Amino acid sequence: ARKYVVKNHFKGVPKREDYELVEFVIPPLIDGEVLVKAEWISVDPYLRAYNSYQAVPYDQFSYQVGVVVESKDSNYPVGTRVVAHKGWCDHYVFTPSTQPNTPKDRIYKLPDLQGLSPSLGVGAVGMPGATAYFGFLEICKPKAGETVVVTGAAGAVGSLVGQIAKIKGCRVIGFAGTDDKVKWLEEELGFDKAFNYKTVDVPAALKEAAPNGIDCYFDNVGGEISSQIISKMNVYGRVSVCGSISAYNEDLTKLPKATILQPSLVFNQIKVEGFLVWRWNDQSKAFAEIIPWIQSGKLKVKEHVTEGFDKLFDAFIGMLAGENYGKAVVKV
Ligand code: NDP
Image: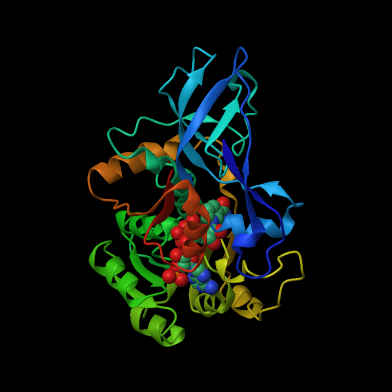
């Protein structure tokens, strides 16, 4: 079997030399064990962010969907599909009866996707889907008619947040990194307005698109643009701080840079809350809504599929550089 090991603390953008592809031998299974073969492996921004905090070397973590190919546990017969945080490996062995039950370490059977692609187990019906659903609905608590801004809007989480906001009757403004993504958000996903954050004047764009101010901000990117958006928020606005990809190529263990944001937080009585998706232990409630939304066409899911276990690194770098529309995933 094969797995990717991260050897270094990345300096800036991760480099191919920071990874080593390692072969390892899987011994014969003993009672209670199950052998899983990876089918879909996820590449996500937190793989970059968490590198600052890890002791090196470490096995590259991430979510994957796999299929049981050999089994000594009758609850997991051959052919069972499972979702696990087992990372960039093409096979792994686990013991269902002793598996930890924390949200991150849990290995669970892929929910019945009713004919949708199993790859959604690492996307809209997996960690990013739960992030969008809970992180937006439970922290922003949007009301119909309110104005919602989403950054990273064309990505896995952002594209879902914007569409969920539309389902809830909000006015939705998105920011993404190319004109073509902007077009996709407006024409295919139903965003009321979208902008290319690389070329637009953000305060002017907000003045035009949100004449009544902003009630909810779902922040995927952090940095300057977030300060500009937060400073345009209405009284009692809510900010869900999901990620800050604009800073992930920095050393996150160093002290953060200060921004002068506090006056607008105070005067407009804004609530800002960061979260980690692991907080919601039972995510089935999210998936019970997301699956029918997808099937009825209310929620459009797009995947950016890269083929081949050997292409994991390229897929990862491509996602960080913004190549993906929707969820970046590797078909093994
Ligand atoms: P995406 O699918 O959105 O992929 C990352 C995107 O980020 C790229 O496509 C790129 O799009 C954009 N990007 C890259 N660099 C920058 C930059 N400097 N400024 C602005 N945008 C940039 O990833 P996910 O949907 O998986 O994740 C989105 C965010 O949510 C991340 O910050 C991630 O860490 C966070 N997250 C947090 C979770 C939590 O529990 N809190 C759980 C899951 C995700 P573009 O072309 O628009 O630049």
